[in-house]
Amino acid sequence: MTQVENPQPQLSLSTSAARNLATTTKSVPQMQGITPRWLLRVLPWVQADAGTYRVNRRLTYALGDGLVSFISTAGRVQVVPPELRELALLRGLADDDTLAALADRFEQQEFEAGDLIIQRGQSADRLVLMAHGKASKIGRGEYGEDKIVDTLGEGEYFGDQALTGQPHEWDFSVKAKTRCITMSLSRQDFDRLCEQSETLLAHVANYVAMRGKPSNAKGEAEIELASGHEGEYQLPGTFVDYELTPREYEMSVSQTVLRIHTRVADLYNHPMDQVEQQLRLTIEALRERQEHEMMNNRQIGLLYNADLKQRIHTRSGPPTPDDMDELISRRRKTQFILAHPKAIAAFGRECNRRGIYPNTTELHGRTVRTWRNIPLLPCDKIPVSETGRTSVIAMRTGEKNQGVIALHRTGLPDEQQPGLNVRFMGVDDRAIMSYVVSTYYSVAVLVPDALGILEGVELGREP
Figure (tube, one colour):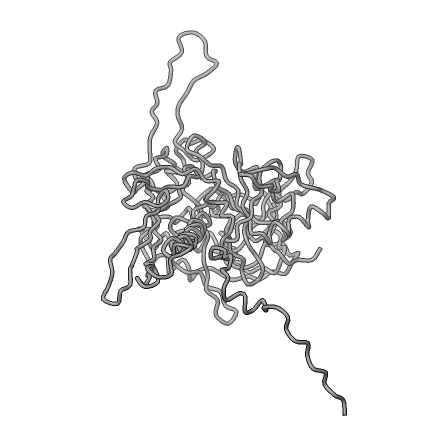
């Protein structure tokens, strides 16, 4: 039997006992949810005293393009009738019965990767909607070679001019890059429905008349000018017309009610102010929500307010240098690119494959990666889908640049930070103090080409 040795007697005071007579050095409450919030940093903030910001633009004749939605049941795809108003040809058509009749006339077709959806030189006699998949639009180069001029994704369409213009042939081909499902409407079916519906016939006639008015490359009403003339030339008269119903941005709000028991505020208020720390963390959470709303809100969010002509798709899936170049080439003076951190990592992998090493720069005291000397900033508020797809945003900012701006209202009662106030609501019968914490904000795109989006960015695709 082994004997247990007697422990050595304690010769001094233990640290655990000593701590009862000592104080501790404490940190302020920490929060993992704080991010760099680059969107709030780089957007210039404009004062909106009236609470509403109106964006006045020149009159535009070109009707905006949109994305069409579909529903699928047991492999059968159907066009959602009201979504046909997203087509430039049918924008503003109020007759729901006519839209339903049009939707019923679309025919479903399926293609495997590599199949030709449209062959160049064939008769352009139908409208084609992309219901699923991704396809390449292939044109003819200067020396007769084929070249990819665009990438078409879900919801996009082509051939709408075939329904209203003179008979002609396709001057491009469309080839499926993945498995594709299309919905097509023939010129004959469209003409038959026009004969049956006076409303549709009148709407199409108005569309053709609007399309025939002189406009510049951006679709704005042309300003008549003369140049290079000699002698007593008759100068044209002109004026600059404006949109009759300009877009107005109202201030959005994020709010919460902070509650603190008076006993906590009275007795446990040293060495740190409990009210101050509660407010600090609440304000951080509100700022995070503010950035999320400015990116994802359907009314004001950048992801939903980008013009459809400024949305492009990746050519191969992951974000390549070619995709980034095409994104920034869509606008003058691109100042910032925002992407999810995983998208930035995916872009870095594509650069490594090609032996390209992007530069870095210092912005707001931090070192960030750049592409073509444009800061590439991480933003985790850009969503990533379950299939591992996300988006990359490029933008020009500032009122003078006709770019993207953020809106706020300063000078609020009980203002703690610009556009954020904390108002005391009183103490209830449970001795709980309440504060309503509010932040008011919005974001406006002054002209369509100020904001562009690279969509369908794949993150987990292996080379």
